[in-house]
Length: 238
Image (cartoon, rainbow, N blue to C red; front, top):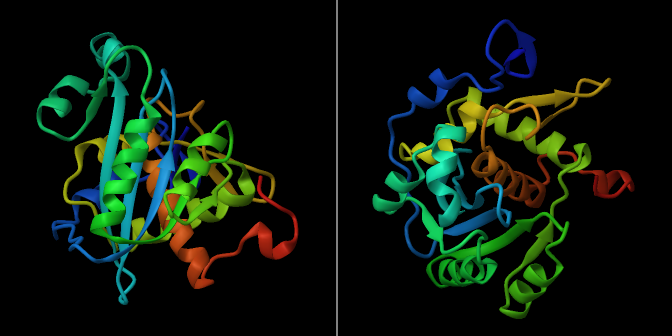
Protein backbone atom coordinates (compact mmCIF):
# COMPACT_ATOMS: atom_id res chain seq x y z
CA UNK A 1 0.00 0.00 0.00
CA UNK A 2 1.19 3.49 -0.80
CA UNK A 3 0.19 6.55 1.22
CA UNK A 4 -0.52 10.10 0.16
CA UNK A 5 -0.39 12.15 3.35
CA UNK A 6 -1.77 9.35 5.57
CA UNK A 7 -4.25 7.77 3.17
CA UNK A 8 -3.48 4.58 1.24
CA UNK A 9 -3.28 4.94 -2.53
CA UNK A 10 -1.81 2.65 -5.15
CA UNK A 11 1.78 1.54 -5.37
CA UNK A 12 4.93 1.24 -3.40
CA UNK A 13 4.44 1.72 0.33
CA UNK A 14 5.48 5.33 0.76
CA UNK A 15 3.98 7.64 3.32
CA UNK A 16 5.67 10.88 2.27
CA UNK A 17 5.56 12.20 -1.27
CA UNK A 18 9.17 12.96 -2.13
CA UNK A 19 8.47 15.81 -4.53
CA UNK A 20 7.88 17.95 -1.44
CA UNK A 21 11.44 17.20 -0.26
CA UNK A 22 12.94 17.75 -3.70
CA UNK A 23 11.10 21.06 -4.05
CA UNK A 24 12.99 22.53 -1.09
CA UNK A 25 16.24 24.14 -2.24
CA UNK A 26 16.91 26.59 0.59
CA UNK A 27 19.86 25.62 2.82
CA UNK A 28 19.54 24.38 6.37
CA UNK A 29 20.86 27.09 8.68
CA UNK A 30 21.79 26.26 12.27
CA UNK A 31 24.12 29.00 13.56
CA UNK A 32 26.07 28.46 16.76
CA UNK A 33 24.06 29.58 19.76
CA UNK A 34 20.72 28.68 18.20
CA UNK A 35 17.88 27.38 20.36
CA UNK A 36 17.26 23.79 19.28
CA UNK A 37 15.38 20.59 20.07
CA UNK A 38 16.93 17.11 19.63
CA UNK A 39 15.35 13.79 18.74
CA UNK A 40 17.26 10.58 19.46
CA UNK A 41 16.43 7.17 17.99
CA UNK A 42 18.76 4.54 19.45
CA UNK A 43 19.69 1.08 18.26
CA UNK A 44 22.47 -1.35 18.99
CA UNK A 45 23.08 -3.68 16.06
CA UNK A 46 20.30 -4.05 13.50
CA UNK A 47 19.25 -0.44 12.89
CA UNK A 48 20.86 2.96 12.55
CA UNK A 49 21.11 5.30 15.52
CA UNK A 50 20.15 8.89 14.77
CA UNK A 51 20.31 12.26 16.50
CA UNK A 52 18.50 15.02 14.64
CA UNK A 53 18.77 18.68 15.63
CA UNK A 54 15.75 20.88 14.86
CA UNK A 55 15.94 24.68 14.82
CA UNK A 56 12.46 26.16 14.40
CA UNK A 57 12.01 29.78 13.36
CA UNK A 58 9.34 32.30 14.24
CA UNK A 59 7.88 31.76 10.76
CA UNK A 60 7.32 28.06 11.52
CA UNK A 61 10.14 26.82 9.30
CA UNK A 62 12.29 24.06 10.83
CA UNK A 63 15.99 23.69 9.97
CA UNK A 64 17.42 20.19 10.46
CA UNK A 65 20.85 18.68 11.04
CA UNK A 66 21.35 14.92 11.31
CA UNK A 67 24.02 12.83 13.03
CA UNK A 68 24.03 9.08 12.34
CA UNK A 69 25.78 5.88 13.46
CA UNK A 70 25.86 2.34 12.07
CA UNK A 71 27.84 -0.84 13.06
CA UNK A 72 30.89 -1.11 10.83
CA UNK A 73 30.89 -4.92 10.73
CA UNK A 74 27.41 -4.98 9.18
CA UNK A 75 27.91 -2.12 6.74
CA UNK A 76 29.00 -4.03 3.62
CA UNK A 77 26.43 -6.83 3.94
CA UNK A 78 23.50 -4.52 4.67
CA UNK A 79 24.31 -2.03 1.95
CA UNK A 80 22.75 -4.61 -0.34
CA UNK A 81 19.87 -5.48 2.02
CA UNK A 82 18.85 -1.87 2.60
CA UNK A 83 20.12 -0.29 -0.63
CA UNK A 84 21.91 2.31 1.51
CA UNK A 85 25.58 3.17 0.80
CA UNK A 86 26.80 3.20 4.40
CA UNK A 87 30.51 3.18 3.56
CA UNK A 88 30.21 5.98 1.02
CA UNK A 89 28.25 8.08 3.48
CA UNK A 90 30.95 7.42 6.09
CA UNK A 91 33.67 8.49 3.65
CA UNK A 92 31.73 11.68 2.97
CA UNK A 93 31.53 12.41 6.71
CA UNK A 94 27.76 11.96 6.85
CA UNK A 95 27.73 8.79 8.95
CA UNK A 96 29.91 7.37 11.72
CA UNK A 97 30.71 3.66 11.51
CA UNK A 98 31.01 2.16 14.99
CA UNK A 99 33.74 -0.51 15.24
CA UNK A 100 32.38 -4.05 15.57
CA UNK A 101 28.80 -5.26 15.53
CA UNK A 102 27.20 -2.75 17.89
CA UNK A 103 26.82 0.99 18.13
CA UNK A 104 28.63 2.60 21.05
CA UNK A 105 26.05 4.69 22.88
CA UNK A 106 28.84 6.50 24.73
CA UNK A 107 29.90 7.96 21.38
CA UNK A 108 26.37 9.28 20.92
CA UNK A 109 26.38 10.79 24.41
CA UNK A 110 29.69 12.51 23.61
CA UNK A 111 28.23 13.85 20.37
CA UNK A 112 25.14 15.23 22.13
CA UNK A 113 27.35 16.80 24.80
CA UNK A 114 29.38 18.49 22.05
CA UNK A 115 26.16 19.75 20.48
CA UNK A 116 25.22 21.28 23.84
CA UNK A 117 28.35 23.42 23.64
CA UNK A 118 27.38 24.60 20.17
CA UNK A 119 23.65 25.14 20.67
CA UNK A 120 21.18 26.07 23.41
CA UNK A 121 19.37 22.74 23.71
CA UNK A 122 15.82 23.12 24.99
CA UNK A 123 14.90 19.42 24.98
CA UNK A 124 16.37 16.02 24.10
CA UNK A 125 13.55 13.62 23.19
CA UNK A 126 14.51 9.97 23.74
CA UNK A 127 12.51 6.75 23.70
CA UNK A 128 12.60 5.47 27.32
CA UNK A 129 12.64 1.80 26.26
CA UNK A 130 15.98 0.23 27.27
CA UNK A 131 17.62 3.66 27.46
CA UNK A 132 17.49 4.40 31.21
CA UNK A 133 21.28 4.58 31.64
CA UNK A 134 21.65 6.63 28.46
CA UNK A 135 19.02 9.10 29.67
CA UNK A 136 20.44 9.32 33.18
CA UNK A 137 23.91 10.02 31.77
CA UNK A 138 22.56 12.87 29.65
CA UNK A 139 20.72 14.27 32.66
CA UNK A 140 23.90 14.04 34.75
CA UNK A 141 25.59 16.11 32.04
CA UNK A 142 22.96 18.79 32.55
CA UNK A 143 20.87 18.05 29.47
CA UNK A 144 17.06 18.42 29.51
CA UNK A 145 15.91 14.91 28.61
CA UNK A 146 12.25 14.22 27.83
CA UNK A 147 10.96 10.67 27.41
CA UNK A 148 9.20 10.21 24.08
CA UNK A 149 7.50 6.84 23.68
CA UNK A 150 7.02 5.21 20.29
CA UNK A 151 3.34 4.31 20.68
CA UNK A 152 0.42 6.13 19.08
CA UNK A 153 0.05 8.45 22.08
CA UNK A 154 3.24 10.29 21.20
CA UNK A 155 4.10 9.24 17.65
CA UNK A 156 0.59 9.95 16.34
CA UNK A 157 0.85 13.70 17.08
CA UNK A 158 4.51 13.62 16.02
CA UNK A 159 3.54 12.16 12.64
CA UNK A 160 0.85 14.81 12.19
CA UNK A 161 3.26 17.64 13.05
CA UNK A 162 5.88 16.25 10.64
CA UNK A 163 3.33 15.73 7.90
CA UNK A 164 2.12 19.33 8.19
CA UNK A 165 5.66 20.66 7.86
CA UNK A 166 6.33 18.26 4.99
CA UNK A 167 3.33 19.22 2.88
CA UNK A 168 3.83 22.89 3.70
CA UNK A 169 7.49 22.58 2.58
CA UNK A 170 8.57 24.19 5.82
CA UNK A 171 11.50 21.84 6.44
CA UNK A 172 15.07 22.85 5.59
CA UNK A 173 17.07 19.65 5.23
CA UNK A 174 20.21 20.73 3.38
CA UNK A 175 19.87 17.84 0.96
CA UNK A 176 20.73 15.27 3.66
CA UNK A 177 20.76 11.98 1.68
CA UNK A 178 20.43 9.79 4.77
CA UNK A 179 17.35 11.57 6.05
CA UNK A 180 15.93 11.63 2.53
CA UNK A 181 16.32 7.87 2.17
CA UNK A 182 14.60 7.30 5.52
CA UNK A 183 11.71 9.56 4.50
CA UNK A 184 11.34 7.68 1.21
CA UNK A 185 11.38 4.36 3.08
CA UNK A 186 8.79 5.29 5.68
CA UNK A 187 5.35 3.71 5.85
CA UNK A 188 2.72 4.24 8.53
CA UNK A 189 0.14 2.23 10.41
CA UNK A 190 -3.35 3.68 10.73
CA UNK A 191 -5.58 2.88 13.72
CA UNK A 192 -9.37 2.74 13.76
CA UNK A 193 -9.56 6.43 14.66
CA UNK A 194 -7.44 7.42 11.67
CA UNK A 195 -4.32 8.19 13.72
CA UNK A 196 -1.05 7.34 12.03
CA UNK A 197 2.43 6.49 13.24
CA UNK A 198 5.52 5.25 11.42
CA UNK A 199 5.98 1.50 11.29
CA UNK A 200 9.45 -0.01 10.96
CA UNK A 201 7.84 -3.39 10.23
CA UNK A 202 5.91 -2.02 7.25
CA UNK A 203 8.64 0.26 5.90
CA UNK A 204 10.90 -0.92 3.11
CA UNK A 205 14.20 0.02 4.79
CA UNK A 206 15.72 1.89 7.70
CA UNK A 207 13.67 4.84 8.95
CA UNK A 208 15.51 5.75 12.17
CA UNK A 209 16.60 9.22 10.93
CA UNK A 210 13.05 10.34 10.20
CA UNK A 211 11.86 8.94 13.55
CA UNK A 212 14.48 11.06 15.31
CA UNK A 213 13.53 14.11 13.24
CA UNK A 214 9.85 13.67 14.09
CA UNK A 215 10.66 13.37 17.79
CA UNK A 216 12.67 16.60 17.69
CA UNK A 217 9.88 18.46 15.91
CA UNK A 218 7.25 17.07 18.28
CA UNK A 219 9.31 18.01 21.35
CA UNK A 220 9.38 21.58 20.03
CA UNK A 221 5.64 21.55 19.30
CA UNK A 222 4.86 20.25 22.80
CA UNK A 223 6.95 23.01 24.34
CA UNK A 224 4.96 25.54 22.33
CA UNK A 225 1.65 23.92 23.22
CA UNK A 226 0.79 23.55 19.53
CA UNK A 227 0.10 19.82 19.39
CA UNK A 228 -2.05 17.56 21.58
CA UNK A 229 -0.30 15.30 24.04
CA UNK A 230 -1.51 12.27 25.94
CA UNK A 231 0.05 13.91 29.02
CA UNK A 232 -2.62 16.61 28.73
CA UNK A 233 -5.36 13.98 28.55
CA UNK A 234 -3.98 12.14 31.59
CA UNK A 235 -3.41 8.95 29.62
CA UNK A 236 0.39 8.70 29.66
CA UNK A 237 2.93 7.76 27.04
CA UNK A 238 2.12 5.04 24.54
